[in-house]
Image (tube, rainbow, N blue to C red):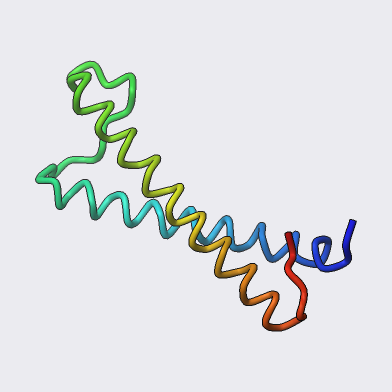
Length: 88
C-alpha cells in the first residue's frame, strides 16, 4: 500500500465525520424548504405516509452521497497539492 494512502486514512476518517454533520444539517434545511416543519419521518413512523417516508429517505441519501463525494474529492485534491501524490 502506498504511503500517501496510509497517511490519508486518518484525514479521510475525520473528513467523513465532518461531512456527516454537514450533510445532516443540509438535509434538515432541505426538509424544511420542502414545507415540512417537523423532523423527517423514520421508516417506522406509523403516522407518516409511504410517500413521505420514501421521499425523506431518497432526499437524505442523495444529500449524504453528494456531500461525502464533494468532501472526499476536496480532501484528495488538497492532499495532492500538499504532497504531490493522489491518496487513492
